[in-house]
Image (cartoon, rainbow, N blue to C red; front, side, top):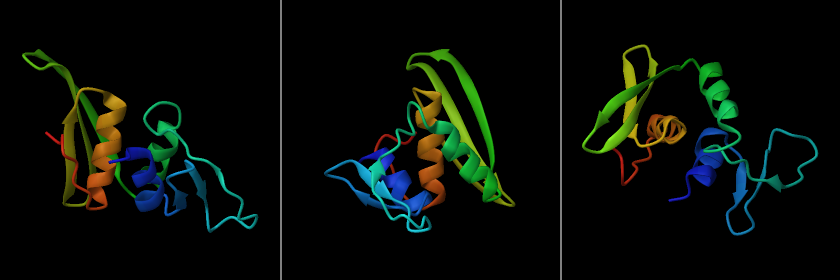
Length: 110
């Protein structure tokens, strides 16, 4: 699974060249391919804002350290819908929860 490419395709609705790590936004007039954003490291705010614009409320909680170490739970909510996951990194948790909104299942989802 390529979280960045999946977010670009499913959530941002961009055309993605996975081999070249490029994307093109069909809504943009220039139609040029650009480097694929890294939603896990640098461009996580773009994902958060996109989900906010679509009516989802994001809640993140840092779980106390336990036998698995520090974990983060992220949940996107809208009306009666709720999509949540627990991951070892807050940004990863946000990305996985957003992908769950769009029906994708992640192998390490907790």
